Length: 384
Image 1 (cartoon, rainbow, N blue to C red):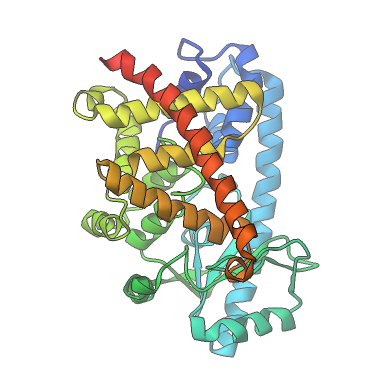
Image 2 (cartoon, helix red, strand yellow; image 1 turned 45 degrees about the horizontal axis):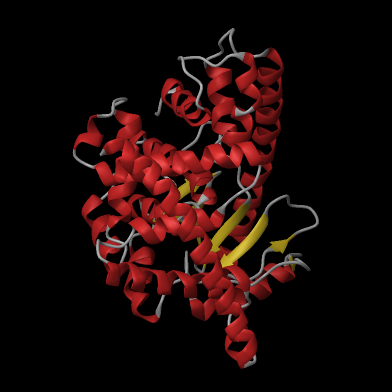
């Protein structure tokens, strides 16, 4: 498993504080950063396992309290997952638990070290309506503020169970040409016995692919720390990952550098040194740009997703203006279809509203592009 020292060292490097252990004042910043990076409970578990006198007692006490609460929450979520699996099994509808649910079912994390925001369930497209009706019959109902995405229905809540349920027909937005990938996901799935109930989860390679692929829009910094931690835990569990398949899928999705960037981040935590910078200067600059963005976010307490998207536009495609322009157009469509509108409603909008929406997107990319160039020049000069 990734060490406490490597996680803490990275957090320190982002906050800009020298030394191997932070002074008390830094612990006003590190919990905020850990929450932004979605590793609060992992850090809480590490602190509980590896206590150190230099960490303020109030921080240790808060993390212990949060961890205990999450242990209890995950125990209840486990019962909820089992009940849903039994419900679908009785109805004869195949379903697969992925993302956080798969982590819980496989027992990848120590108890309470991963926070689950919702329960993601994958069903076949032909079973979508039946599955929704089944959950509604069991007491689940659509949230009033829930939004349907192109790959899942609006979140469903239950008056008794704590976890919202997202019913998916694909793990992330897929085009018509990606039916093969979806079929492979089902054919490679594995049955795990969880609380004496057989539950279907993605195979290890598919687990990693879904984990990395779903981050291409919102979280494009290096390292993607939650993913790197999860990948490390999968390897620690001796589960086999086919890295060639990951590379092929990235190339198929027109993001050939995605897996390269991910493993660059993995290596940075595995070897604990910077020898990788000697042969991958572009990745190193991207990582430093990401750290600059994180530091800026910590100072002004806001989340600059536009800058992160621009980093994706800058790096994920292969080199060259044409390929990056094509990828930028694809990314804009992805934002329109998944982040801002219910599927199908965009085509129905009047022409002037469509023009206004694309104008807003254009402004977003111009502004974030300018910001990115400033960051790029700052890091580029350091390596020239």
